[in-house]
Length: 196
Image 1 (cartoon, rainbow, N blue to C red):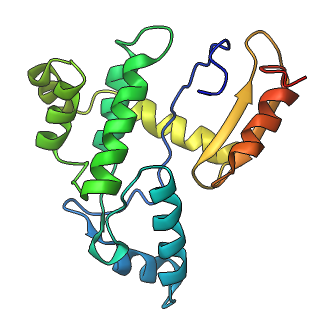
Image 2 (image 1 turned 180 degrees about the vertical axis):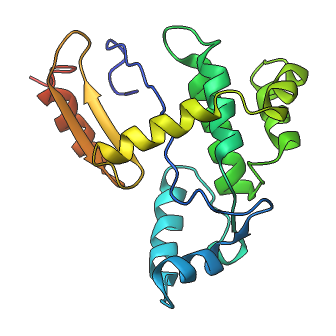
């Protein structure tokens, strides 16, 4: 998107639960993967992810040191931000980037109200108001419905991208990690950009 400063992109983040039954406090990533997929060697995948991240300036916490946390509260924080955002989704993108950094680069518990309050404050939101919101269950039903709709709509994993141009019906979907060229092709296909 940064390669096309003349085009206006609007990114809307939607919730998706890979595993809604992760307990409070989280579990070790290695234990989670073993329970989900059986005893396998994920070291080659982990190295590939870490190398790819390094190219993009991301320093992933090594997989043997990472935990997996429940994400309902972090999804609720994103929903809270959506309701207070501008039309360009500026704050939504900021909170997502903050949550990704906390989780993938710092192994922070993104289900912790303390962590989420600080994350919200770091992008200029009222931390105390966020804490009060997170203490309840507001929007949990909205998020559960959005997650269900995604799964009924044949989305089975993340990342998943639906790319479209405002006012047009044509959509292109991409699933999983994709190279920049795949996005460029999708942007061209829906008429967002033109290389010619």
